[in-house]
Amino acid sequence: MSTNALVLSHLLLRERPSLMKRLRRMLRDERAAEDVTQGLWLKIQTVHDHPPIDNPAAYLHRLAMNAATDVLRASKRRGAEIEAAVADVLWVEDDSPAPDRVAIGRDMLERIMAALEALPEPTRTIFRLNRFEGLTQREIAERYKVSTTIVERHIRRALKALDDVRNQP
Image 1 (cartoon, helix red, strand yellow):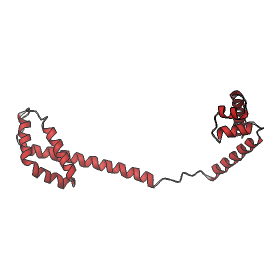
Image 2: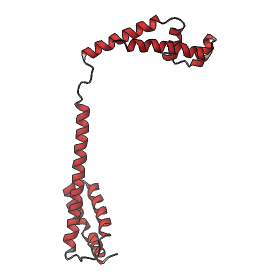
Image 3: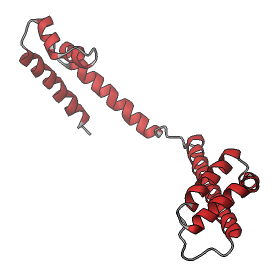
Image 4: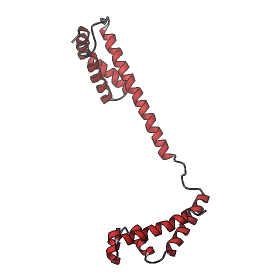
């Protein structure tokens, strides 16, 4: 340990009560003041002998005030970030679709429902069982006593009909 670090360590132990009082006043937080003091202890362990410190007490207090200022800046920055996040949540613009988009969506839904109803049997039922009731192709095949390839063809046919409706102007 360097001579400067040793002198500052002893000084920190002696000056700790007054430093803590000053830091508590500046930071308005007991834990933050304690954290700064602990950080100060770690920082002074790395101080070298060159150049020699002429006024260790002033140096120690300056280190403490700089560390406290850094904590205040970080706290202010975090506070601004939190305020911005809260503002984003509280002041969300109305993101509901415009009336024309609602009308277009309803029209598309009606056309899709009509296309579903127009599908031949068993294509319509197989598609509904698969897509709306969540049955697997194998379960549908077992229910209708057909192969999964046939079930897959029916589903593909239904998807093609719905895609054609979706691509119509």
